[in-house]
Length: 253
Ligand code: ZN
Ligand code: FE
Image (cartoon, rainbow, N blue to C red; front, side, top):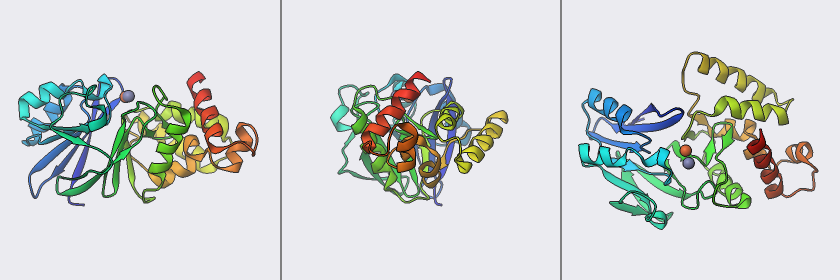
């Protein structure tokens, strides 16, 4: 691994990620929930912040942008199709864009659902999914439709199984409690939830997680499986219907 990734806790339960390539001396940030903890981390490392990559326009992902831009002259990267709602962008991207950040080739995935303009950034071996795919969960569907969010998750599911998923929040324990109400007999889910509880008891993040593990334990990623459809309603449901029902139940949970 030629880059390092630091997890920075922000606000009450947000994560920002600081990516650094020591060899070329380049640093990038994924989302800027608030400036303070990010500045503290950058300054104690003696780095400059070259790029800020934004996943979507919600305040808890962009609120720190202007302060960071002023401090470091960072270039801001975000979805061209959502530029009106994002802070001023220096580099506008679409799914066709290919970026080189911290010496790594980075691609962009459209993952609408939580918001219409939500994107994910895919580095080799690491996907920054924010409020689309999350550890044991997924973001609430605020602007898109349930089929749209299901498609977004399916797109992420096609990445290599050992891809690490860096999501935007620490919601894992409540996601896990919900997941256990559905798949009461999934041994890997039970073990995972126990392990995540131990992590949180030590005040450690449960993020990132491996994509493979999400496919085996995250109910939202499992909405296409006959065994999940049987739990949710009937094996005849479409994948989208099963996903929608799981998402609605989680909203009530
Ligand atoms: Zn959000
Ligand atoms: Fe968020």
